[in-house]
Length: 403
Image 1: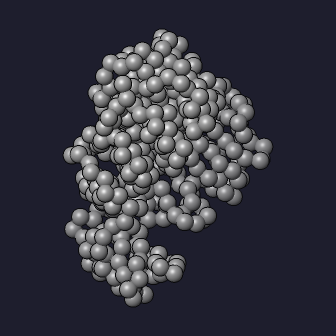
Image 2 (image 1 turned 135 degrees about the vertical axis):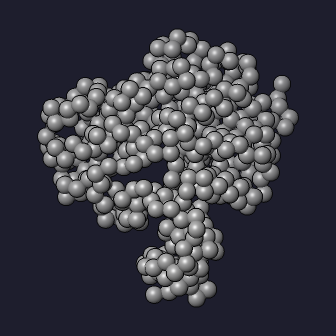
Image 3 (image 1 turned 90 degrees about the horizontal axis):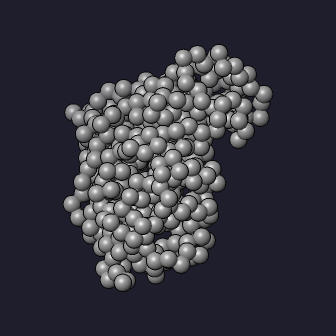
């Protein structure tokens, strides 16, 4: 047993203290708390420890609202008041930017109007008939009956998943604005599907191992006055409340323009959003169903100036010969690949709007882009409340734009 004082909080929401001079990461610890802990893992340069007893408790500590919080690996910040989680995320982003020596403007914070019951997607493991999440950094399954971050219709559906009689596999529950549900199942077993087992749940489709066994493989999502077809395997933001706010901010920063390039475009949400201010929008996406959704979405919303393209961004982008006034980038957590970064530097647009769910890769990319672009606006959005994850939107303008 070791006693340590928490001196700071890391990028994953863990407390940091020292045992015999070695950095030690402690989950569920707050700044200036003194804890007795047990070392779970001892690495060459750091320890990972578990709290056994609190000797000095922060006055800012609150009781987590989820009964699984202490053992589930899904959330990280429920022991903080909501306003403290926002402050933590702001400081985290500022520290990451400062470490990369990136000059940034005053940051605007956009909070989540619904910090619980906001998630429209929940991905769960099934092991030995139990359904839940893995305990952090383990393959030990924590069985859950509900998740307070998920929409109520998802939790209602979750209560009936055991009726499928799956022993081992995965299940993802997705829901839309109308509380309609897509059920996506992965298992090598034969399942017991009976629509009557999910009474009073608006299930519009069940997909088993990428094949439809009931209904459709998609639903429709409504946002900012647009209707979007969303396939079961297509990306869509998990928080509709903050996404609405994000869309408004992006639209504020788009002037009437000639050509917009939408990279990592998903089902085409951002391309559709800005299409009324552009003569032409190119959208590049690697997931086939998402591109097919985009093609339908442009018809549904009566937009004929959008050109969805199926392909890997780094391979497809060089084939487009048009010049771009504005480029919108919403990459996965790994950020922009090096080849695409080079293309963005060589084929400079007047404006870049970069949406990121990972401030570490965002800072890496901004470090290179700052040679040609000035960071003019920076937004932090609480897309993933009570987790250490944070969404950022950056608006950059070319230093010497091509004419």
